[in-house]
Length: 381
Image (cartoon, rainbow, N blue to C red):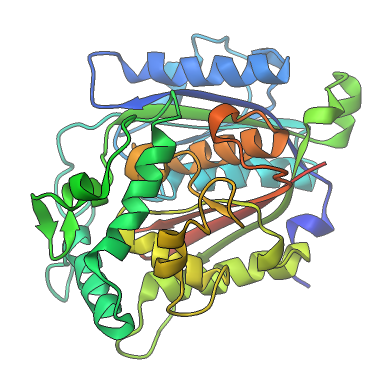
């Protein structure tokens, strides 16, 4: 019988940390990662020797960067592993740490993510060449989806741009965001067009950054006298991959619908109970498609609801209060872990100017090249 996280030991987020997402700098990745890791340890009021396993999500740094980074914290002999799962690398590292604690392999585990842009890997994505032909660039793929959605639903370019207007406004309140500037509708709609209707400000920036999260068991909470008023419980952790779909299916949305549905089923939490969502909005159309796939609204309704403010901070559900990938940024390796950081802040009531009122339940969502999807449901204790 297949088990879910809810069937195992309870798992709690107790420590979160970030290094600012930004354009590539001269700072070494080791410094970025250690900044986030130390912040998470400080937040949890734990030391590095208390960590019993460590997972690092990274997509751009090559072989075994984790060892070179964490040796500066001390050589404690714990199991470590590097996780690469495209844009979902950080989400996958978090899932691995959660599984360790849920299964009783450890009482205290850490998931981190770090990346810096660099020279492209050889070959198509560092792997073998596609045997059936060259793939479509992501921006072109999502521009085609945007054109189809606009034709089918009748929404305007302004509806599409409303996603970016909202997320840039949120990012302007986030000191860790790569883009920290409020943008008007006119600014978002200004050229250059990257593909189809997608302008530059409707496409996420890929820079550098780092994020870290500490998860623990109830035994660890008692052992280390951890403040229970700030606990956030992991209610569901689901990982899925693409299947065979009918021709014309939006693979990313269908994969999202299935994976999120499993998270709802495992946790007993419904879409109407979600207060905060951090989702994969690398391009503005994605927020519209995924909000519908998650059941946060009906099919064809998301664009108008976003434009009307329903998914603003303070609305019925806050979508991408961090600024999302569009404004917070998408350094790839840390992105999914950073989503957990933001949702945890929200559920603790510690998000400052971008705090969503009475946030109790949150969801994080990342897809990786359309082939994988990771979803986590978190809830304040």
